[in-house]
Image (tube, rainbow, N blue to C red; front, top):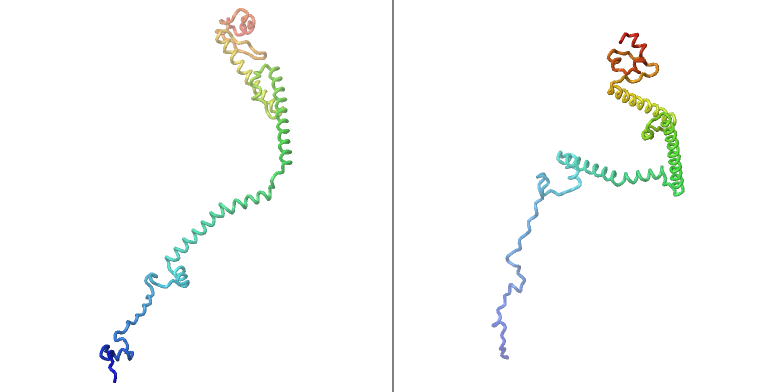
Length: 223
């Protein structure tokens, strides 16, 4: 029998139980199941579903208020968008459809027609002014005021000049009477006009005026 210097039995003690595959004496902990959230609680921790959202919006008072407010806001925004973006374009399209753009030829024709009508008006007014100046010269009316009384046609111009003549003659007569009175004499009597003489007026008359009114003076015994 040979000598074995490496006696494994004496050097390495073997654990027979370990080699036999004995399980770990300390078991791993089993995970506990997560508890499901209880119903209610304002929706905190609840699973969000389409049915729960519909129920909240249809049955809950706060949900109904929120949905109504949201709907009103969307409608208002839609109206504003329509008024600012869609409506102006529709109006422009409708106007363009009813009143198509004017062609260059039609534009030139319209401008020529407007120029002709304007020249006709100016010529007609110039003719009225000349006629009014002629009438004013015949009646000794101030020519500088004539243009203010020219009307749209001959009839209106003639009527306006009649008003000017009446007012102008009345103003002239009032100024003449004032100057006669300021000079201490009786204004001259117009044809067909009767004036009641007074003794004071006769005393202020010149000899020529007394002779001119002698019959009236004697009749009324003013001397």
